Length: 65
Image (cartoon, rainbow, N blue to C red; front, side, top):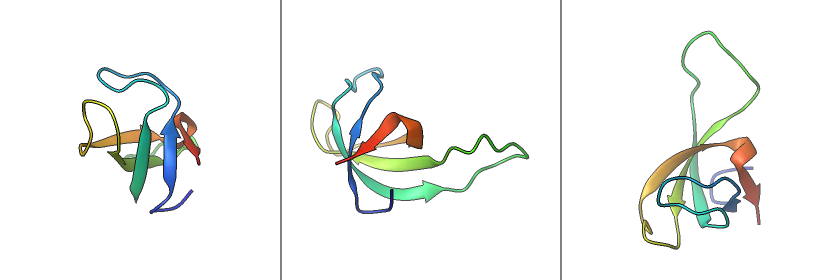
């Protein structure tokens, strides 16, 4: 996964149903001394009520289209 990819969100969230399409903007830097092996991505929602809003998701909750 890289910035500019279209992704589908696999996990339901408040106001964002599973299956929502989003655009990957950037990968956030991890904070703290933990490392679970997952990346945090900032995505721009492309459909639904929250279209145009930026949200953060773990890479395991996103599927590249």
